[in-house]
Structure formats: structure tokens, C-alpha cells
Length: 544
Image (cartoon, rainbow, N blue to C red; front, side, top):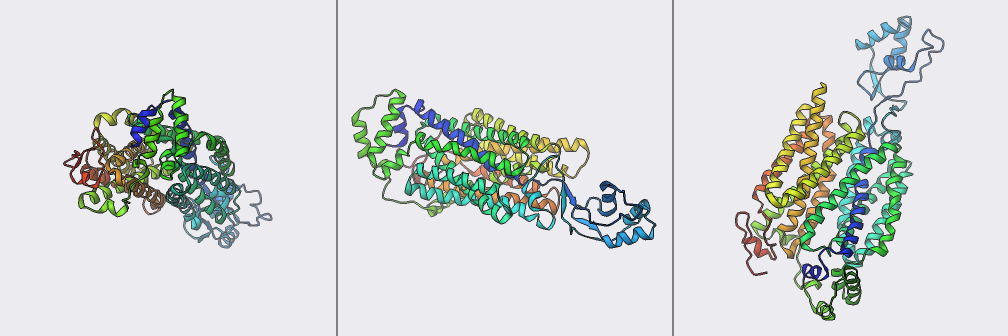
């Protein structure tokens, strides 16, 4: 007996399954808060060097305003530099404190520049405070911003690995609760962090905990969803993730202090503690551990809530069946690379996951650099993501997985490249076009990300599906780690990050040409089935 047969006995998507699935969707929304909060927590406000402490009280310039002092001592367009105070003071004395003349002489490069020595002043119109303004992560310390984002995605990578291993040993439900508790503690401590050396470890733990808890919750809540509803369930949960995207922009708009924002998205984790009583343990895991009586109790509860009569012989047969208990043969990552055809497919899928994650989070984190209100920009990017999920839900079954993946990745990549070439233009019309093409890129990459997620699960044979999907998830986390680093390439050349995102997206889309179509095809069961795929079709080597 396999899992699909089990769901058919209970009802593929009855009241019991719908309740558990809704719980997972709600946690998906909270996950979006934590996955993307660095856009606001780590935003870079407009800033400039703090005005030097120059004594002009006994001069004709005693009543100069800060704005006038800024014109004298701060080089235009150079927020990390200040004019040499001694040279400027000497020049003012020589010119009898004629501000106009001094400014003219300064613009002629007669006064040298130096790095800031008195700190920085930050604009407060868009953000009350961020880690950037609190910890001065600008100029020579700006690398801390991209480092913090990469640390978070590094935590997600570790969380996906560690929680997967520990949940196999200790059970899904205990590890979910442990992840929620870790998320709560790390978030609260991070909000109180006095410096980056305290903040970064906590942010790493947040990444690990939120990813680990979500993966466990996803597994728990979807195991009893029947195959007829599995595709819909996969896309709807991502729509809830997109709603979290929109919710975060609203929360951040009203809470502009990063410490309070961190608390606002962390404290709701307390409510998810009740999942201990609402989420059941994984039935396949219980059976694999020989805890048959506990599995039977959960199944009886599900059957009763669904109004299904299940005969006693069903439970007897379930306990005797070894299918859900695992076989003697163990499969590893190397099995995904054992043959040329299997290796080509696996590497192609893993590369697609890496690029999709890289571009998805690259565009999301880059929303603060778009012209206009950062909260509205972030909201629009989240909104087009929801539209992309809805479109996939409607079209992916009709047009096929492979064609949808190729088109969305290539169109999204071209949109990023076009936006990159426009980004150096200052005219209002080009700023609008940049925003339009970035939104188009986000729309397409969101769609392709959801498609490759579904497609990968259908491409890997049953015997290595968990292993293959695990490496795919790791590849996505690696893409997330590199996204902030690539965004920093704008300091080398403004269009470069978008050109990198666009080029990789097009290359990945073209590589998808070599993947077989999976829509309306039987799932491969063994490695031998993959060997017998022909030009996008699946001809099973043995009967299912």
C-alpha cells in the first residue's frame, strides 16, 4: 500500500485534510515574513557624513544653517567623504569668510577630501531605523549588509539539512515545535542586538529555524492530500506565501523601526505553539518506526472527521504492509548521477533550482533600489507573484510543465536584461520602464520557480525522489546565499546585477529544453525508468 492508496481510503481532501492544510498555509505566510524581512530590516537610508565639529562661533559664519554648512564641508554626491576641515577653515579665513567664494574654490578641487571621522547622519523619511543606520553599515562597512543576507540564507541551507535529518530520527512534530521555539528566541534576541556580532548568529538561527519548521510543516500537512489535489495544494500554499509578501510590506510601512518590526513578525510564532495539538505526527514516519498503534489512532480520527467508514482489516493490512516502512536498498546522492541520462537530468534540475532562487531573491532584495516608494515597490513585487501563482494554477496543466518553464524563464531573463540597460537612465520614462520590466521579470521567475518545484518532484524516480529534492532544495539555498553578493556588483557597474540575473535565467530556460515533459505522464519508479525516457515521454521499464 502506498501513500496515494491511503489517501483514497480516507478521502483525498476531506475536512480532516483541509484543516491540516490550512494550518500549513498560515505558517507559510509567517515564513514569508522571515524570508524577506531583510529588505526593510537591512535597508540603506540616504545618508551623508556628519558635519565636522568646526568652531565658527566667533566668525561672520556663526549663524550658518546645517544646510549651508553641508554645502561647505560635504562633497556633492559623495556620502562617504568630507572636505578636509583644516584646509577648508584656512581657506575661509583667507577669503574673509566669503562663503560663495569658498564654495567656488572648493568646487575647483582646491580642498582635499577625507573619510568620515565623526560618523554619519541618516534620513528618517522612509525608515525610522535599520541595522544599517544603527550599526553604521555604510562606506567601508557596507559589506556587512550583504554578509548578513548571505548568513541568513546560509542558515536556511543548514536548516534544510539538519531539520531533515533530525525529523527522520525524532519525528516531524517535535522538530516543528523546536523550529518555532528557535525562531521565537532568535528573533527576540536579534531585535535586542547591540551590534552585528550578536545580530548575525541570531539571524543565522532564524534562517535555519524558519526553513526547517516550514519543511516539516509542509510534509506533515500534505502527506494526506490525495494526488488529485496535490498540484492545486502546491500552488495555493505559494499564494499564501505571496500574501505574506503583501502583509510584510504593510507591517513594515506602519512599523519603521527595525527592532519593533523584528518583534512584530517574530512574536506571532507563539501562536503556532498550539500546532503541537493540532498537527498529527507523520503516519509514514510512525509506520517506519514501528509505532503502528499511534498511526492507527490518527487514521481512525481522520476517517471519523471525514465521515468515512474504514474496516478493521484495512488497519491489519496496513500494519503488515512493508511498502511504507521502507525497503532494504538505500539510495544516495550518487544514485542521481549513476548514469549519463540520470546525471544530465539531475544536474539540469539542480541548476534550474539554483538560478530560480538566485533571481527570485535577487529581485526581491533589490526592490529598495527601485525608484519610488520602497513599500509600494515591495507590495507590487509581491502582488505580481500572486498573479504568477494563479496563472500557473490555471495554465500549467494545459500547456505542460516544460514549455511553461522555458517560456517563463526566458521571458523573465530578457526582461531583467532590458531593465539592466535602462537602469543608468535618469529620465522619468525610463524609471517607469525599469519598474515595468523588473515586475515582469519577477512575475516570470515566480512562475518558473513554482513550476520547477512541481516538475522536479515528477522527474525524479520514486526511489531517489527525496534525495533528489533534497539536493534541489540545497541548490536553491546556495542561490539565495549568492543573491546579495551579486547585488553588490552594482558598485562595479550599475546594470551588472540585472544582467547576471537575466543571462542566467535565459541559459537555465534553454537548458530546460533537454528536460522531459511530465504532465499527464506516469511517474518514474526506478532509475531504469529514467533510462527509457524518449524525447520528453516516459516509457516505464516495468509495470507500476
